[in-house]
Each structure stands twice: as structure tokens, then as C-alpha cells.
Image (cartoon, rainbow, N blue to C red):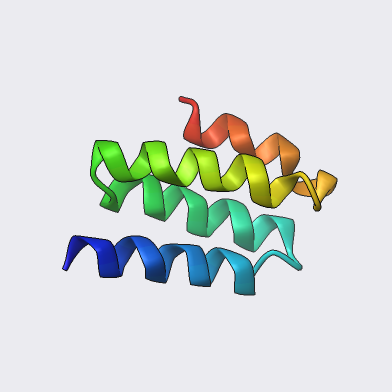
Length: 65
């Protein structure tokens, strides 16, 4: 079940990546919902994903809090 939430979170973040404000909003929600090890996985995924979208790089600070 938990893995499904993590996968869904990634899917949502990909879908809203066109709008930085929406991306930040969904990322904040994800940090509240996901388990600590899932947040670590999400952090790694975000590093990879934002390498192609530099406008989202500053959103990494949300997950590093």
C-alpha cells in the first residue's frame, strides 16, 4: 500500500511540474504523508527529475527541511 502512495506522489509531481506553485504545494503534501524512507527515495528521484527542469531546483529545499 505504501509503495502505491509513493508512486502516486511521483505521478502527481510529474503532472504538475509545469507550474512551480502547484509543484511546491504537492511536494509539501507528500512530505507530510510519506514515510521517512520514502522521503529519502523521493529526494533521490527529485534530484534526477529536476536535473532536466532547472526551474524546479529550488523546490529541493522543501524536502531537505
